[in-house]
Length: 163
Image 1 (cartoon, rainbow, N blue to C red):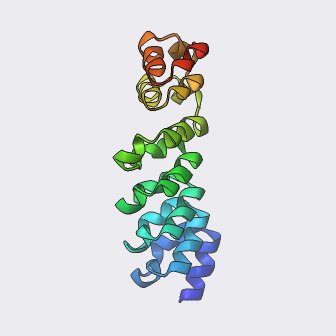
Image 2 (image 1 turned 60 degrees about the horizontal axis):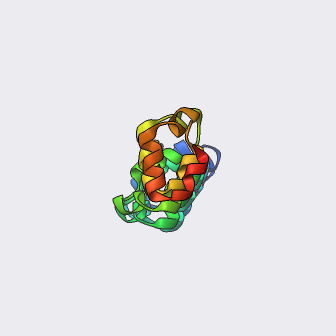
């Protein structure tokens, strides 16, 4: 029964898992579910995993939901930006083109600048190569790392002040 499932997903998005294929393709039901838990996008119909409004709602609730979005949505700048602003690691699910977008990379670093990420040499090296501004979010140790600093300065000479 649609009304029962709709009420259930409004309380717990994971109720979508038990819904029929027909209800997993129901835009209102899926939208209510992803607003509760974005990662249940995985159980939505293929068409809804490509629906911009549904995917945006999912990634705003949990950026990790980008993993379950259609390829087209992973290449949508607004969707990816919303995802990385919610969960910085969602950057890995973005299209290759958007992984090279300065604003998106900076948003990912700013949002999820945990000690772990700020100290992750590989991640920060990739970030500063795209936007030297990311150096300011690197750990103290990486701000003293010659290769990281050099990559940041090559991208933006003004980054010398953050070493």
